[in-house]
Length: 224
Ligand code: IYR
Image 1 (cartoon, helix red, strand yellow):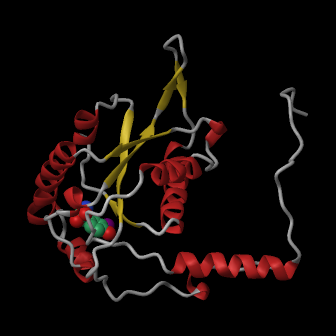
Image 2 (cartoon, rainbow, N blue to C red; image 1 turned 135 degrees about the vertical axis):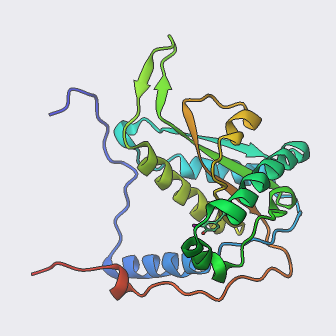
């Protein structure tokens, strides 16, 4: 047994099976209404909503509970403009040179291109950083375990929380994203993981007509 102190699992809640069904169905139906949006309104969003969504994200499980993530929330217009300029420079390289024909064909249904006006229009850009290691107060390094998995889990929970609040999101991954360290003053030990754009969708926002794989295609049950 562990030598570390433990506390009772006091906040766990069990539900009767019918209540479980109702809850998970409602949860699924709400998440199923989430769509990645590329047309954002500039309508302001109260900052405390973003703060609470970040608290939700920070409950994600992580390797050895080391919580290897950092979120930079950008609402400043000049900083958003710098990020847009740097991202579009990388994206132009991507669309004009780096992307393979196969990759461009895969992106075709999404209708994306190197123009990223949403990086200035949306009220918030949340830059998610992955910490390869942490630092103790005395400056010593602490290795982080499974930082990609952990940061991915936290980001998924952030997207779900923002959606629950009624905000749209876009997971944007300009590549490479190292410019985010410089613009946002983050140390070299942190790797930009993705840029999460969030706000209200534009009134006339449209989304590609795409579908999700059915359960049979995504899951296999190995039972008796
Ligand atoms: N980062 C580029 C290209 C892009 C790549 C994938 I994979 C997408 O799902 C969408 C876009 C861009 O943001 O346009």
